[in-house]
Length: 246
Image 1 (cartoon, one colour):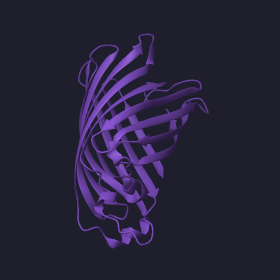
Image 2 (cartoon, rainbow, N blue to C red):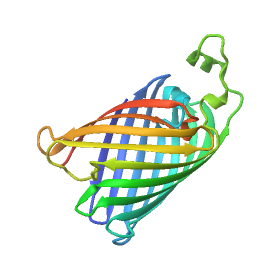
Image 3 (spheres, rainbow, N blue to C red):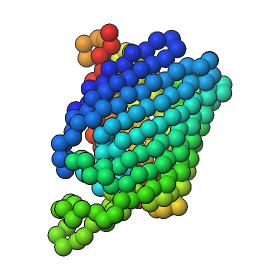
Image 4 (tube, one colour):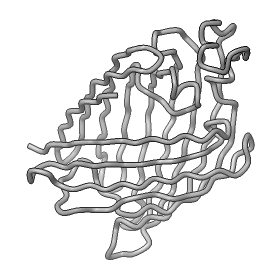
């Protein structure tokens, strides 16, 4: 997958626009747009619109799916060390060649506490998520090529089950992606979660970033996770990101 993003930031708002080109089950092209608006020193509101974007909401969607999304959120910086973030997502799931698979609604609430006053990049995070999903039936038989011969897939391979999940994680080396950072930096996040669908799960992410030419940033990230949102399935990702500041 190739992702090209343009971002413009001012003292009060940030705009992002990106184009995506991917290939898996089929070739697909998508885009996304996002705005963050700083209401005051404590409140930031945001919205985003995604079309044909890759998604890791299930194993089937990782292999052959995309999603369209409308989302709105608000972040409240209660103090210099605590924050509360809430976001509502409305999703349409499709195959990479445009077949409608189902819909989803996801409400996420995250609370964070910075562990050290003089080191803002160590954060303890508590998250809660509530997901509701609807699958389109029947599933096109040609998707059976994604599984072992003789097996028949159902829409459950693509669309997650309804779930409620709570998670606790420790993140370190976190930086504002919109700001330039100097020097080599290690970052990561490790946590556990509990879901009414799949019981106890986990998430882990480890990355390394550094300038290459000076006013830029190259980041490599490895992640591994297993959660209720993925019906208990595990997933692994490798991401390489390059950002140029001008």
